[in-house]
Image (tube, rainbow, N blue to C red; front, side):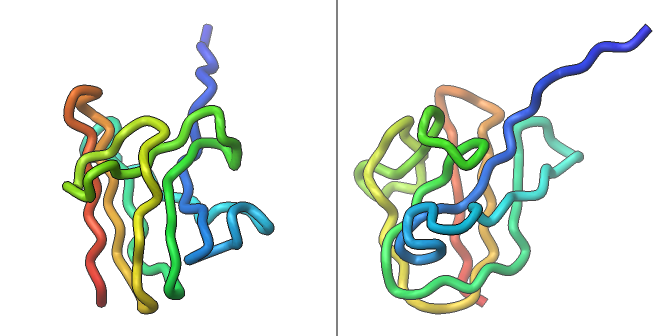
Amino acid sequence: TYTLVKTQIYGVVGSAYNDWGATPDYAFTPDYSKEGAYYINEIVLIDGKMKFRANNDWAVNYGDTGLDGKLDAGGDDIPVTAGTYRITMDLSDPNNMTYTLTKK
């Protein structure tokens, strides 16, 4: 026997990437060394704002109210400047979900 589990596919959406969903979101890669962790090694962003969301839909989305590196469900847009970034997102602790944006 086997069990199928529907997984969330998280991605980047926003004026900094795809004009808030005009094209599919840039998908994260799961970090198989830690359940609930995801990464994007290289994404090109323009000046604008972004958020993270699941399955190219707004039912599950995260922003950063307060710009403290902690993700908030439905939180504020995250401002970014143009450049190439590495992004990590850690949802493993629902009480302390975090992200990092590292400009390359």
